Length: 135
Image: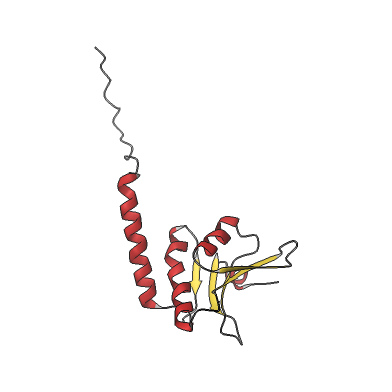
C-alpha cells in the first residue's frame, strides 16, 4: 500500500483522508518505532494492516474529538515532531495557526528550561589547555 509520506519523501504527512473527515498521519514504509511511539505520545492512534505482521502502519486523530479539537491536536504535534528531527508536512485544511504557535512556544520554553540542567559542551578551542599544577 502506498502512502503520502512515501510519495512525498517526508517522515509524517498530516491530511484529511478523501471522502472522510478523518485526519491521518502517514509515515513512510519502514519508519522507525520511535516515530510511531512519538505519534502515540502526542495523542494519535496507531493502526496496522495486516495486524499479524504489520506491513502498513498509519495514525489517526481520535474521532471522538470535535472537528476543531482534532485539527488542534494534529497541528500541536508538528513542533514536537520537528524538534525530534522529523520532516513534517500538513495540509491547509488540517493546519491551525494558533495551535501551532502555542505548541511551538511551549516547545521552545521546554527546550530553554532543559538547557541549564543539561548545558551544551563548551566549544573547542584551538589553544591548548593550561597545564594542571599539583602541589
